[in-house]
Length: 223
Image (cartoon, rainbow, N blue to C red):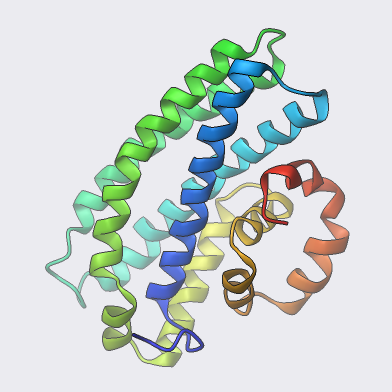
């Protein structure tokens, strides 16, 4: 297994998939609970809506970075990989993200939100069914061992930076996307993942400057 202290695109990919998987799990659990029992208060309603909106933006940004940066970069290095099939699945997921966003907007504004929450839960269930086979393929062809064999350390850093920058450009507001990414990871994974970020982001922007803006999501995060 590759040394997790070395830059490795395959390790980074697995961490991103892990935090998105947690987003799906949280969305499924809370949408079902809130549909059955209602929101406990207005702050919870608003925080959950922000969490789900940000989830959808982060997934969209991640897939655009794969389609437009990572997959083209690896086409010549892994010509047998089914990148076109994976990109086609991204389109299926994108359509579900539109439905998820529509459902959470309804749940955020409707006086009677149970119907919108049930639609959200149903759509997240459909997403979950696609998601796990999808990332299984990606993590197979771009595993830590495979990417270590294909790229040198400097090249890993270069590609990881390209992917991260492109992803964040298409993930909505950074003051929501970055905390969502970091705090849907456990402490150890978060520490490793954040090493690739500028120190000012981790030490100042997220915990201080941006805190008030992402704080409504905190009940749904590992923060």
